[in-house]
Image 1: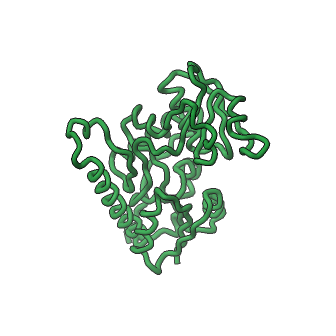
Image 2: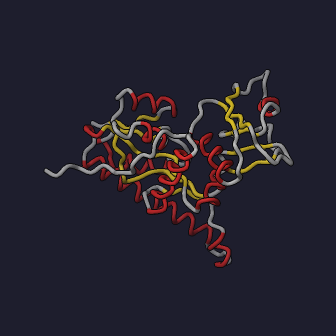
Image 3: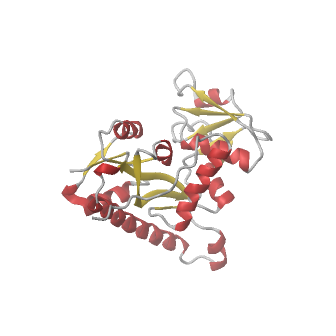
Length: 268
C-alpha cells in the first residue's frame, strides 16, 4: 500500500481530506512536521510526499511530479511577512529564523526584481526569553516572519506580504506545495486519486471566491481578487512555478531551472 507523507496545515487540509476520501484504504497518510516529510522522502521511507517545489527542483532527476493537484496561493495570505524599519529606503540585510526555505528566496527575489535592492540573508537565533524578535530586529534592516508567534511584538512595524507582492508583480499564483514521489512506486490509481482530490478542493476554493465577491461592485471585482488558494494545475499555476524558478536561477538562488513535466503511466 503506497504511503503519503505531508504536513497538514489550514491551507492544505481540505486537499488532504479529499485525497483520504477518494483513496480510502488504498493509501496511507502520514501527518508529520515539514522537516520530517522532507527526511522521509529523501530516505525513501515514503512513496509520495506533499512538499515545497524546492525539493522537486533539487531532486527532479530522482523524483516524479504528479500533475493532479498542488497548493498555490493568490494574494495576501498574511503568513510570509517582511518587516522593516519605517522610512527605510534600502534593505541590505534580511534576518530570518530556522532554515532558509522558499519564503527567504521569495523575499530576495522580490527585493531584487521589484525594488532594485541587493539584500543579504542573515540567519538569526530563534526568539527566546533572552532574545525577543523585537530585539533581534534591531540587528538587521528587515525581518522575515512565517508564524504569528514570531511577529507578536512587531505589530507596529512597516511590513509587506510577500505572496501578495509576488501576485502584484507577476499576476500569477505562487505554488507552495507539490505532490512528488519515487517513479517506480507511482501507479495510475494513485495519480487518479490525487487528480480527483485536486479537482474537488479547487472547485470548493473557487466557490469560496465567488461567495466573497458576491454582492460587490463588478468593477471592483475585476481588480480586487480576494485572497485564495488553488489546488490544481491551471496554466497560470504552472506559469507561476516556472517564473519563480527562472527568477531564482537568474539571481543565483537556485542551481538550475527544472522541467515541469508530470508523471504519466507507461503504455503497456
